[in-house]
Amino acid sequence: MEITAITAFPRQVKLKTPFKLALGELRDITTLIIKIETDDGVTGYGEASPYAPVNGETNETEQAALPVFVNALTGCDPRNLEQVHARMDVVMAGHTALKCGIDTACSDILGKAASLPLWQLLGGHSHIVTTDITIPIGTPTQMVASARTYVAAGFTALKLKAGDNEAADIAAINAVCAAVGPTISVKVDANQAWTVSQTLRIAAQLRAPNLIAIEQPVPDWQLLSLPLLRAQSHVALMLDESIHNAHDAADAIRLNAADLINIKLAKSGGLFGAAAIDATAAAAGVPCMVGCNAETRLGTAASAHFIAAHENVHYGDIDSFMLLAETDWLSGGFTSDGPTLTLSDRPGLGVDVRL
Ligand SMILES: [Mg+2]
Image (cartoon, rainbow, N blue to C red; front, side):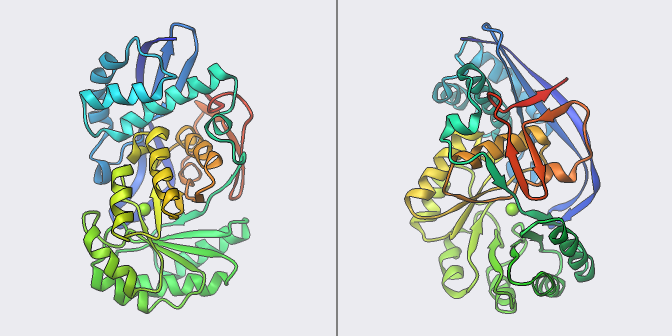
């Protein structure tokens, strides 16, 4: 089987309501859908959802870089993921969101060629995945109201965005934790907005037994300060923006810098790189979460298949599709009921894409 064409389709999708986090406010997203065709007639799809503040890519840079990868991959067997990545990495470093779209489309083809759903082909742990739901930065009253609505809808894990205002963050986190009670787990994501001393000060004021982790409180490059932070804080530390690949994960683990790692396919260049991070973390006894960029159902399906295949992934944070308005060009992959995603038993990603 050989790749004969790789085509990109930019698609703008509106959010149901604007979403505020420490890095800015989102109202709509522009994502890029990758279609890979083969000489066997098998076609695969993947999502290359860029996020410039974290991995330096936009829809425009992805489209500018794509011809380089088309040149490198035309004629390559898409089922040989090791070779696909070697060919991509030798012609261009970085560009992990675009590589994720290509990797995911190749993985979709792999599943279709094997007549197996991807989760089973990758390891086959379970076809049911749960996700938390993310609550954007707001007033404590707004965040408590959102939390109560989601808990009533069946969600048992919440992720609170923070990092705009220290006093408001503390008030909101404590108010939400108290309002939802001890059976609902809460994570806080400051998206690099705090300093080390600020994180320690804030963590000391959080009175919540159900708070299970603070995610990436400090800038991504401050790995060396994290062992001290972990030693002095009672809250587990999850790394997100600091971890893009297995090398980053190995460094963090050697330094005792992480209790948990947030894998995102758009940071790791797709499922292939994500598996390397997870294996590195699993070998050191560090559980992972799988998060997401602002991805549609297509990217979400890829993440859900990955979670479903990897037991060391203890948490899912793949709720972005719930925040987006419905699109008429995507369906399938999984069904969702509150926090529960049940993967389709169709081959590959199981997603219908009508471009
Ligand atoms: Mg994060």
